[in-house]
Image (cartoon, rainbow, N blue to C red):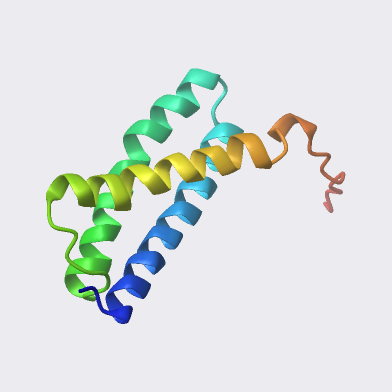
Length: 108
């Protein structure tokens, strides 16, 4: 049986990873010129950061519980937050070109 602390720790890891994936996806979409560049960077760099975060949060800090196999860990803690973060950025956030920024004044 799973303890309440393990379930809360796992939900915390998934939530932090989802937030990171959404912010990193938005960053890549704003900074990179091509659409494919943002997709490639999102699919290559974000999972590497999520693996490092998983090692830190579940290994060093001991959050989360035993999911049983490596495949389940990759699915629940890496793939699910990556998919959720990308979905949040693409479908729920306005496109970066639609956001109006205030004019900046330069003081010389």
